[in-house]
Length: 308
Image 1 (cartoon, helix red, strand yellow):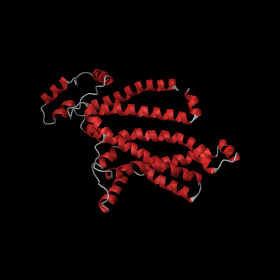
Image 2: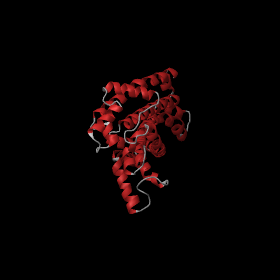
Image 3: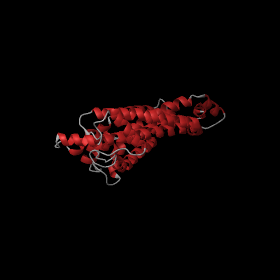
Image 4: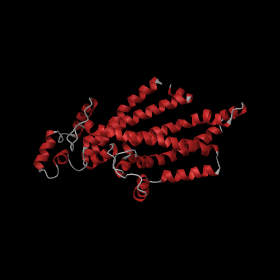
């Protein structure tokens, strides 16, 4: 397993290089320049050109990319054109909000989706199973922004129970968490149901029944453990995706997280913020997926043997 871990860590290097180069290339070819972002559109062309020359923006793209990656390896992600601050000082204060939102949303989706999926699998073909399937399909296909607007209309405008914007108390997290967790919980429930049904027809389940094991012991001690292997991977992917993909929720509910900061940086052509967030989020995603694979290997001996 150590050899597999080291190999995965080495594979991160070319992956990061490809991702950052594509981001660097796209941002460099987009309209606008660092000078226009930092000095504003009211600045003269001469001042903008002088600023771009001072930071080396007029050099060849590959040279600028090489210098940027050399600094990134040393921990320097550049300076925001708009805020005139190091990228780390702009992004790091945003991460606690997004991380809290992502962690709670993943936990909530697991707490909702796993029991419902188990219930649907154990009672396959029943009214409960049909209801879970229908509700899961509806929630999984529902756009996040539409669900957010519906909840704002009901719980804020109609009932006046929850705030619609910003941070303050725990009430500010209720609707964002619901928006993020319900579709994910629906997907988790469907996955648990499918994997549980497959596992329930396995040979080891028939052997356990023949030895006199009760239904609860079979479901929770044997079947659920194997059925959770793909679910854990899905939850890990959801968590990694939410770290940078909760843009819609943060935008709708006015949460000052990483997603909203990235969106603002893209609109402002603030390349250092976009590149810095790309590197951080890509590394986090790869590390999280590696951790999920290792957890799956610990839960499933067959996977562990394949990893070597």
